[in-house]
Every structure is written in structure tokens, then in C-alpha cells.
Image 1 (tube, rainbow, N blue to C red):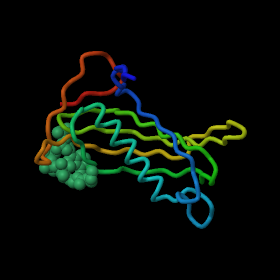
Image 2 (image 1 turned 90 degrees about the horizontal axis):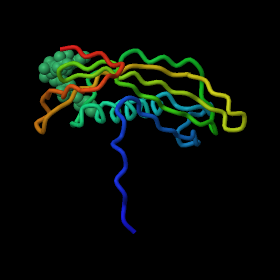
Image 3 (image 1 turned 180 degrees about the horizontal axis):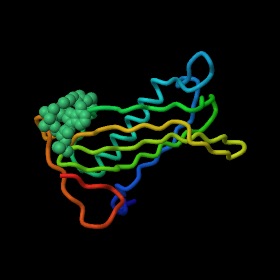
Length: 141
Ligand SMILES: CC(C)(COP(=O)(O)OP(=O)(O)OC[C@H]1O[C@@H](n2cnc3c(N)ncnc32)[C@H](O)[C@@H]1OP(=O)(O)O)[C@@H](O)C(=O)NCCC(=O)NCCS
């Protein structure tokens, strides 16, 4: 069977879901903060790479706010959005929403921003191509 070409992935917003099984939790039975940061960094990485279509590295993570614990068995959805594009850097806002799979109740519980930098094959900062069509992102040169 032949694979069919899919539409190019959108760079506006990257979303993915994860279920909090015990291997992601601490001894309180809630998502371990270090694992939350890892998932958020991954979401920022994918959103920035989709925007730049280049290798990217993380330069900084800014204040991360943990508003509520997330329990084992809950679903988490990560939503990453490129808010600003500079010459080689991007500001990516990442939000984590928890969802109770039984009730469907959702709540935004963790937020943070990451500065991601596009790099060349030598790991040096590399220019990001401007985009042609309208998005909500700010372009700063
Ligand atoms: C990120 C990195 C490539 C920047 O290299 P550099 O030589 O300091 O880059 P420059 O000073 O020329 O800055 C390049 C861009 O990054 C931005 N930048 C660099 N350091 C930054 C910081 N600490 N915070 C925010 N932005 C930063 C600059 O503002 C600039 O943005 P612009 O091109 O949009 O104007 C380099 O520090 C690096 O490789 N760090 C390690 C990254 C890493 O290993 N991350 C973990 C694994 S992914």
C-alpha cells in the first residue's frame, strides 16, 4: 500500500497529549515537576523547529508557573505557540492543560516560555526565514 502525502504541518500551534502513568509521577502520586519541564521543553522544541525548519536549541526557559498538581491517570495536553520571531531566536509559550478522562473537565495548570535559537550545522545561530502569510506572531529584527 502506498503512503499518501499529508498537508504540511501547521507551525501556528503544536499540541500533543500524554497520559500521566506512575513512571511520570513522584511519591505523592502527581506529575513530577522535572518531567513536566521535560515535556514542555519538547513541545517548545517541536513548535520552534516547525517554525524555523532548522535545528533549534534551547537558550533559556523563563519563569514556569505550576498552579495545580496533576494526578496519576489524568491526561495532559501540551500547547506550544511561537509568539515572537527574531533574527535567529524565537519565544515559545507553552501551556499544559490537565483533563480528567472520566468527567472531561479541563484546566490550564502550568505555563512557561522558552527562548529557542535556530542553529546551523556548526551550532551557530542561523537566520530564520520570514513567513509570507498572516499569523499572530511578532517579528522582531
Ligand atoms: C543558544 C546559543 C546557540 C546562542 O549562541 P550565541 O553565540 O550566544 O548567540 P548570539 O549572542 O549571537 O545570539 C543569537 C540569538 O539568540 C538569542 N539569545 C542568545 N542567548 C540568549 C539568552 N540567554 N536568552 C535569550 N535569548 C538569547 C539572542 O538574542 C539572538 O537572538 P536574535 O538572533 O533573534 O537577535 C548558544 O548559547 C548555545 O549553543 N547554547 C547551548 C544550547 C543548548 O545546548 N541547549 C540545550 C540543548 S537543546
